[in-house]
Image (cartoon, rainbow, N blue to C red; front, side, top):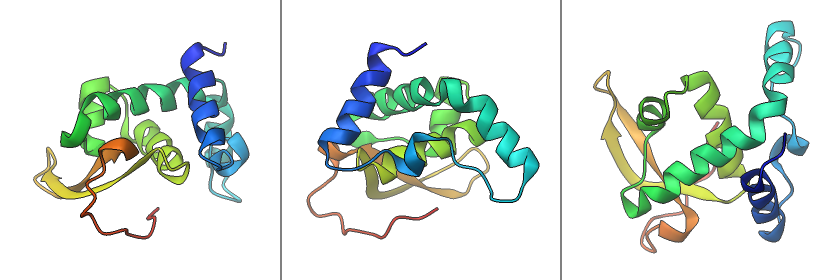
Length: 129
């Protein structure tokens, strides 16, 4: 079922002059039957999950979120959060803030912000996988 948030997200990507990442389909590892199966299973929910991740990052304003924080606060697995966050990044709706914070495992992680909260002084970095 497509929600208003899904429609807004897809409209946001299109109005940014960008196509939906991965042709609008959840990404998978080419040649991996398990990865392809997982992408097929998540497809009906991918847009609403992207919307939840985007809404959460936007709610954090300039403070932003790490992938780890999104996982905990939205009670989603990393294997669900990271692909949705990547789609938002490729769609130009979020960007690296230039900051890092520690994760639950005490490792440094990128802090993501909605494009409207990206600091002007933050250097433009190439997209990472």
